[in-house]
Image 1 (cartoon, rainbow, N blue to C red):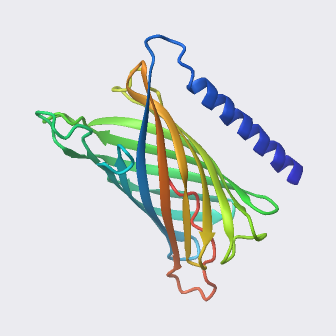
Image 2: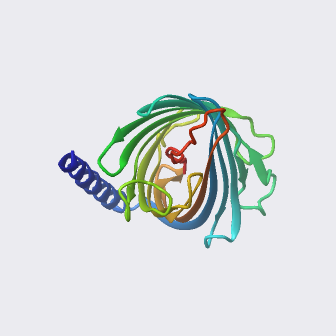
Length: 268
């Protein structure tokens, strides 16, 4: 099992290195690459309601340009999780992101716009000797509009796959007092009548360090690099974003046994 895990890790590392190299190549004179920065702060909650049901929530505060210069988003995700087993669970709910226009001085725009989404998620867990590998499939139905005054809402669909893992560093398990490495890569694909060329929306690679404070609280901080389209067929963007995250879990059910599991696969 350990050898298999090592092979998977080596394969993933080689694939991501190759993808990063190819994505950075400026092979066309028309192709434009831009490097931007931001800062994302997030809180993640998972509260046990009964043996199989949980409340799931995410609350994000995001800034951009010189890391913290301008406001970017407030991002609120709410859902209900049904836990079928230790290896599989399903979550669904709503999302209400709030977006700030990149150019706040532009004429005839709404400086802040809402977006409305439904979302569904399937989570598969592989148990290894010292860690776990998570395979997350997430689907979103998004009603979004442009910043121009009077712009209509258009429906698009987004499909996301995330491969992630937590690796304990000073312990064999994620118990209180444990430091751990947090690694993931997530690919975003979108579709819909208004999507013409940018079906590939984003790729996000994260590397971070976490700490398990106690049975209910953990902290994470790290660096996220993303590669995505930036408004035209020939314009691309590299984003460099430090992330700081707080995770909170509670057992609100009548069960005597406390809920001791880390929140599964936070959405970045």
